[in-house]
Length: 194
Image (cartoon, rainbow, N blue to C red; front, side, top):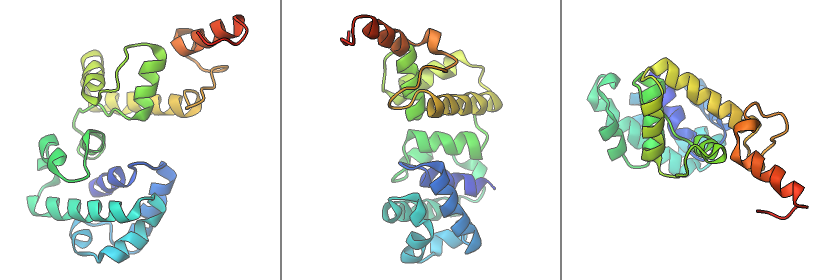
């Protein structure tokens, strides 16, 4: 359901997806995975239900406020990026996740994995969300299915290989990676970092 994806986008801030899944299961079992019900839920009860997602006090406030703010809109499909960004606790990554995955609108999602990958590949050096998003949106066909697939592939690659401490040995893009080349150069020089 669209609202479940939206709630998941808020709950996944600063946590692993498996923890979000536990929180979503709790909400579903308690029959609170609903815009109107979440907008009226007791905050302490919501905190208890979403505790597995971490930062549960902050996220409970954000999730309840989000549900309150979108329930009067009527059709969820009428939500746009500007509106999402005006809500407390919704930044570009969360807004774009909601737009892409819940509302099927072509906004490329930039997350920590995407930043890490473009910097390690040397595509360009930037931490700026909008710069990175523009790069992808300019170079990939503007289609929801392609954006979803591309983002999923980046996440999978980064989770398995481009970790904080990279595992370059079996990485399928190691030959194109600046990090890998720098590491090889350093090892040839006896471990002195270049």
